[in-house]
Image 1 (cartoon, rainbow, N blue to C red):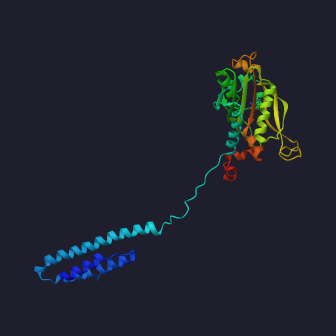
Image 2: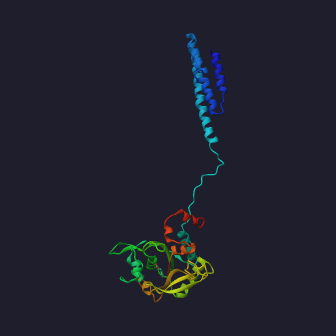
Image 3: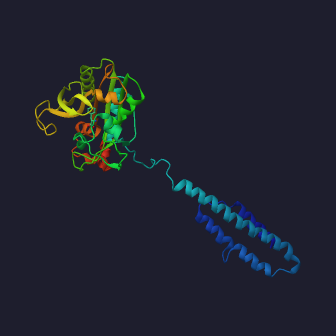
Length: 338
Ligand code: PHE
């Protein structure tokens, strides 16, 4: 009987299965109901007691060896299958969608770059402001109708704390803190109490510019704006200035740029050949005085534009509400623009 056990041992040792099926066969062959080991145990019962000790020990060794071999080989085989057969390392990686810059960010960046080239710094200020920085320092008398054009959301009355209606408030803060020469642009989010429609929103973005120094003239303003329009809309762009009114500038104007249809007539310019782009003017002496700058020594110009409007003209966007809807079908159209 010991010889039989030795033979079974030898066979078990030399067994190297290639797959789980062969291993299962091996298990049945040794440990199954009619398996080698089961039968050996059967025979073992009939041995004379004197032989039982020695043979029993050997038989147990065989059984343990086979059981361990099945467990260990099973693990090796399943690891091999997991890493080799199920995973194809040559497949392309899972795709993930990269977002794109928002059109407002694209245009803001572009405008900032244009003014940076001619020495304008960037200044920022709070969105929640007081009456002084949004209205009073900018020469809006308390009951003046010009305040109605920029109605806003009040957070408290007395003192008046409100959401800024333009980033001219930032320019007041800059003038209060620094002495001329000042050459800065103020990009930022602004708020107005307006009904939301295709053309207007209660939240939008502005960039306002300010230049204060000795001998700054209207000619400097016009030259700066012409440079800006050509950089933004193309070298062939023409500008025109129309008289307007703002409490904080005198004289005040509005700048139009020539339409891409070159006067042929189109929907965008409503067949006028011109597109309204921004407000501008020479800083009113009262504003300089409110910011403790001597208007006898210094003069300045200012301008302000809505980024939504510029992007609308640049990309021919029909409805201002699209900027805030976060519809990927809209946003995807700007992917690849840096
Ligand atoms: N602050 C003005 C507005 O929001 C724009 C402007 C700025 C006009 C500077 C003239 C000069 O409408």
